[in-house]
Image 1 (cartoon, rainbow, N blue to C red):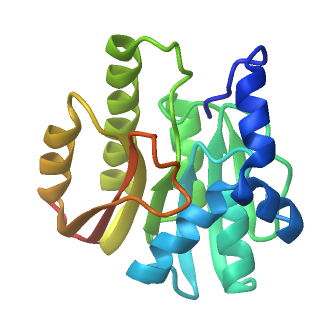
Image 2 (image 1 turned 180 degrees about the vertical axis):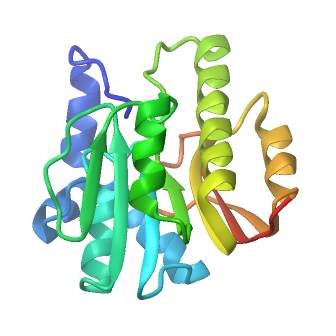
Length: 208
């Protein structure tokens, strides 16, 4: 969802040198973020055949692509983003803001009355470089994602999202624990060491 400023030559240089970027190109993945999801799944094993998955802020589609390829057609994936996203097998893409009621209703219809087994979000805000602005924006996004998870997950479902450590982080983790039996914060190896990003993995959703 967040895109780097095009004037940042140093960012582009770092991308070109990044081993995960290079590996993603060789493996045919849409983004290096695939390896974060893969590394988390290797530890948590929350991706299983025949799931219904909702991918929030999905573009360019790396996470949806991973689940589609990993489960070889045995998944139904609903993806949503403000940005366009090229089509993928087993993925129904809805372009728009999931806070918008019309888009929200589309998502509910696509997920179906049975609900989702997994809600995932790799969203990040557009970065301004001002910590006092960026951190509240990032916390707002994960709170929206958690609220969506509470509305569409079936009992026992899972929720995974990217979240940045800083003001509001601890309160967000406490809030997630109110709805899930198991909540774990992880930093996969594919996350850059200097980044404040971590991933919250919440398992076994309980209706509240």
